[in-house]
Length: 460
Ligand code: B12
Ligand code: SF4
Image (cartoon, rainbow, N blue to C red):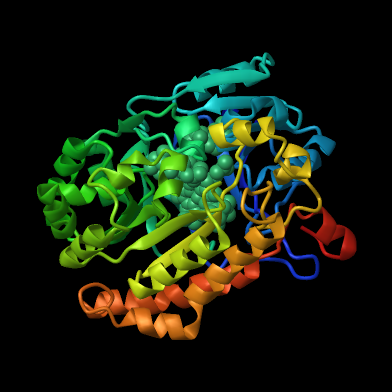
């Protein structure tokens, strides 16, 4: 331990790969959670960051602790990485979304887990490690306000080829309660804002003019959002974020959003089938009643925002026809981007528990660990179609939406995609990239074990 500093490797696992070719994510963004962990650990440790999505991990580099962030999608690969470190007697600590959703599973694969946020607990973990008294479980709780006085170590991201957009948090969590949502489970349906002063300091520190506020729902606290937006206006930045549709009912908020340089939001439209909206419990999508978002889309055009419309498919009230209609709807309305996500039963969410009770979970209930599970495939038995039909219709929607004819048709929307050269360029830069991703990711296997076994001379 040089200078009394520990050596810590921070790791973001990849999801998986194809059997014959290694998958490299086209749209790689900075792993903000590792940057924040870096900020928390700076005084205690010398840090290395490995992003398994595009670089090999040097397991033999001297290291006291490997810290791995785990999402449900990356759990399988995270456990493979942990095994390599354990072979070398290196302490492995895990945290992140999946560690909070299903701690008992994650704990089987590492020495220690942190459940919840790291900010208030990480010093205790490091002290316990130094005193050879590391516990198995630490409860980080949900930290309020988040990331207080903590700034991500962005230097750790340098040279890794991330997209030229800085990820930053203004708030965490969401007040809504959609039945499939992991965020709602992690944050126990609550929403917390960061200190606005800290956000502004961080924007200045990182220097880029294009930001992604990774908030689950940027506008969940509308008054705090307005306070931040007023401060953003003089900075002359461009930004994107995620937010619920009810932002459109507050003109003051919308005006500030536009004036502060917002390009658009990822917005959960989820479905044009009212019964499905009711079924998932997304009341926020029908505060004004439900006319298949006619009014909302007009308002989005009025404000000139480029929308990434997110849809979830496979609800008990969905049919193959209603899902295909959702696809037509997104093309007709010329959304800038759209995602069609098959409902995923994340552990311990209400959706997961319901499907489990009804004996409808496939892959023994743990699709994320199953050697046969493939990316974007149904992991449960839907009500009105077979699992294969759901998988196929999901691919159909992604394929239709990303076809060249659709790209051309959607590009020529005067008040959004064509409203400025910058917006038009953004449209044409990112659409082909996301289109490529759709085909590359589809059918991917989780983890790298099967790929490495098949291609024995490849090292990862
Ligand atoms: C930004 C984001 C993205 C970005 C960038 C991701 C990146 N750079 O890797 C993009 C848009 C590319 C993306 C893509 C995807 N995402 Co995403 N994403 C997010 C989002 C909104 C924020 C994550 C973030 O950076 N937060 C800020 C950091 C600081 O907070 P944090 O991660 O919570 O970390 C804190 C604690 O958890 C803890 N912690 C975290 N890790 C560790 C590790 C250790 C060792 C310790 C001690 C502590 C610790 O400490 C941190 C500080 O307190 C989350 C939602 C969320 N709230 O988590 C979804 C989320 C993680 N994504 C999700 C999904 C499904 C995906 C996709 C699979 C979507 C798809 N179908 O393609 C892809 C695949 C990503 C991949 N793994 O390769 C799901 C995961 C669900 C689950 N059960 O795991 C989430 C939770 C969204 C959701 N609503 O369900 N995503
Ligand atoms: S609005 Fe979005 S983030 Fe909030 S609970 Fe629903 S799906 Fe989750």
